[in-house]
Length: 451
Ligand code: ATP
Image: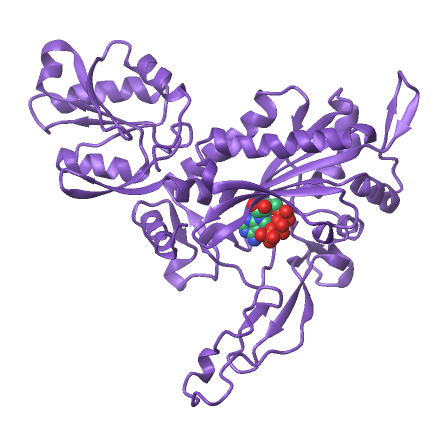
């Protein structure tokens, strides 16, 4: 089981190497909001692109959508979010902190009571639980009145359901088919935390798969497995990933099956993604609230039905964190400690770094030519600052799978040293055909070399 100190090291690495910063840091930060820096953007973009690839490129039964964050407030009435998207909240009368009633350890000591003698009750002094709606409220237009209230979407899924009719009409798809969306969602979480695991503003990757009712169970099982496999294919170690089926008492009233893909984070097993068999709940509710018919007419069987929905709902930030945690490793190299991100090459922010061995003798010029030839094909970096060992370590820390070194032999025979992040093997390869060689290596199946 990974320990909590690992999480601190990953947070420190993320800051040191510019993956993730605390948001508004110069003003002291804003609780649990984060900004992604250069490598963080590249990594999270790769995660999202892999999701799109699995949804769109590798299949022909899913189409893309990008719906607005602000939606008609009736959307949230129909979806049940207005009435039911609440968490039970309790306050501590002593330290004034707010907790989720279902998360708080009632034996936890209250910091405001630290000076009390041990014989006194030093636990939090908690209020009764109250329901707290997690949606962020705002106003559309200049007048702040109830008629102009709108909400920042707490999930991307509803934007898909309200577009069901449009997509059905214009995409020339029929059930079984899916609509996929990636975008920001907002939840006024009572107790956010654990870095980007739970924040108030985050990105989701959600897909709603519409199927004939009789096929729902089969498709549920398909997506349950497919989503587990996606993380494994991207290098997550099988011992750290599991599918957990919800107990019947955990299921939403409309769902006939839900499974969470869980990762063994330093905080323990936690949800990465939920896969749910939602029945016809969503389309029926939006049909009821909007007065529109949200159904499919099968011209062959002459049957009209409300499709059932299978939903895999993932978080881009949570997945990115899982990939980081799974990749983080420390080993020893030449008697020195090395920190390395053993990321799947497809996820690595930078694929190759080009390093002249010395900053003289024409080596930087050749290195720049090599770099110029590579960067049109893949995310590449050029670095000539510091000792070669230091530059390797910098690349290891951001998870770059390959480093190319240009040295004096390069000038003689037009070969370079190719260093592999995981095996540390160094080979001579020709500059001619280098981009193809790297592309081939990057496309190979990859398994984490971590134990
Ligand atoms: P949790 O139980 O952790 O609050 P949830 O079951 O409410 O999550 P869903 O509504 O199923 O989450 O959302 C789908 C996915 O969106 C989650 O599996 C997670 O990856 C991501 N997600 C949800 N809330 C957050 C958040 N506050 N911060 C980051 N990611 C989130």
